[in-house]
Image (cartoon, rainbow, N blue to C red; front, side, top):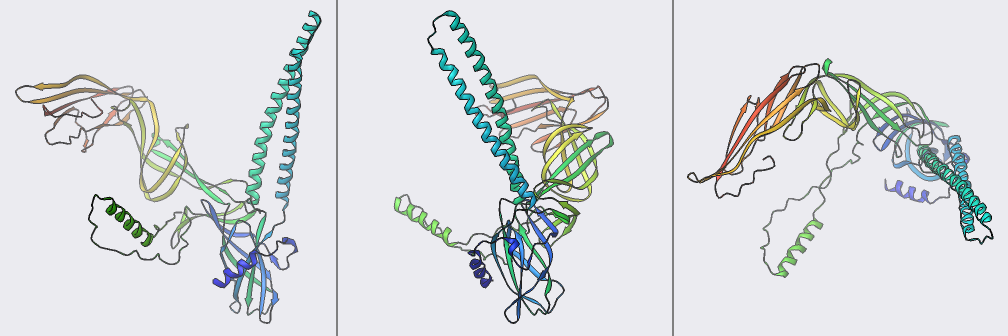
Length: 526
């Protein structure tokens, strides 16, 4: 490995040459690509010509895109047990512009030239405006001359301003086109006009050709998930659609390539981190004098510098047909065409998820009621976080992020204006202090009305906060009608079935007693 890096450094300082002058050079197309969120691992197979290198060795050249990481390159000889790889060196070389890159560069130059012409036109109009503004100071002999000059100034300044505004609008459009063209060029060429020339030294060769398989990491590629969650409450299901948007900027179009998607790059470490020592020792005694404080700070800083850094957490990936690897998993998408630069969508899966739909109300906080779906799937899912379009019965609610790990999920589909839950304070007795009992008391009576204005029955879960005393001297008494179906230390839950067009009410009384002299914080709901 050391010899390889030394050879690589020597080669990096070599003079840049053009690819099409290189003998025995191979630039093949990928057979398989695994996309990660910000990169890709590329698998290629190339049939290469061998050139003599000394008495018992041969060499060949392969070309990698400029965004490739040569340190990640792994090369194997395909189906030839007698040959072996002795060394690998690489260097950067200029890459010839292919037709797509050349066309984009021409388009960009034309747009820049058009921008220059517009800028020159706008400067000329500014000069015209300044000229006619100066004419207002001209000395004229008669009133007729004044009226004529005034009309000429107004007419010409108006025309010049109109022309300027029109040209400035064109200039803004040209600037947008230039940015789009530059982005397209960056995606196609990968922001680099170089490539990697890799020299592979082999021994044991008796022929003029060999087949090499190799993998490497490639920057300027990636993917992100796109989801669609369409709620069908009447059918008690959610239509889940998962797509992936992928892109690559190798400078070449990839045709009929096997595509895999992985959410995280697999760990590259091949050895564990150094074991962190477990040190047990007495703590220094704290003193208020400045010298001791400085000594403690110095000792703590020295200990931090000496202690090795903790080992990074092990990364785990997920994947679609989901294929488990040693340290991560991936989704196999199948063979696709992936052009350089352009983003494209590929469909991963579409499923029907059985769901239980209810409405969730928290009337002490808001009268709004939210549609909620509880999903319980037959098998565990591992869906990475991504942007999702939320839809209810064909109505688009908007986009939010979505992720799922496991078999169960709770998904909210926004506010239903036809279902409301409003709370009204019926009575309030606060701060009453009894002389004989030496106590202070507070009493609240609330009524909550849940209205269903839909043309179908609904099930509403109503949640309210359960008052939590933080002192054993504070007594809390609750009364409700009807009783909640679930009680926790922090919340109370009612489960209510409401017919179409109907309203139901629930009543709640809260009484608090505390010592008379206690400075009582009644919290936010009072």
